[in-house]
Image (cartoon, rainbow, N blue to C red; front, side):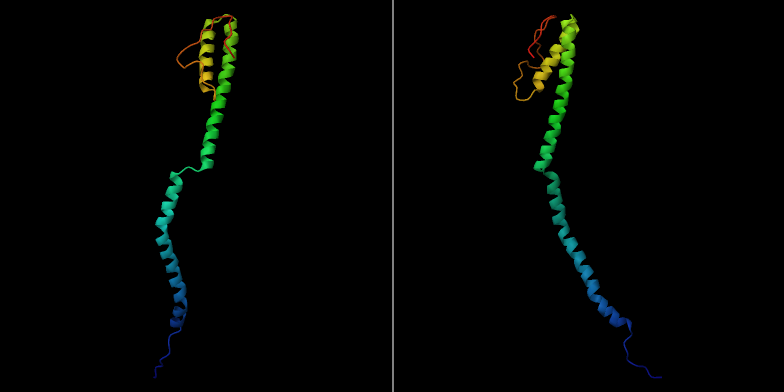
Length: 128
């Protein structure tokens, strides 16, 4: 029996597949090397607030304040009407509502400091 020195058919296929396997390793190494930079970049993004995010937050705060002002103004009108009818408790509530409205109103210096009360008596109307 003579044995030939032929190469098995798998070796040429392995040599052809070698660049593909090495290419996969190179991309994995590249991903591992750049990972710290990407992580640091995302941490900076999370730590800083963009202008649009700040604008959205400010808009939410303004809408919330406006909703509260609307509710207080409706309460104030209701309490003021009851005060005009002679209800002393309603006068106190109207006074408190008015003070809070003045405190929450933007661009207006509160004429009444929270904690102090204007004088409202039945039959009189405070400034509107």
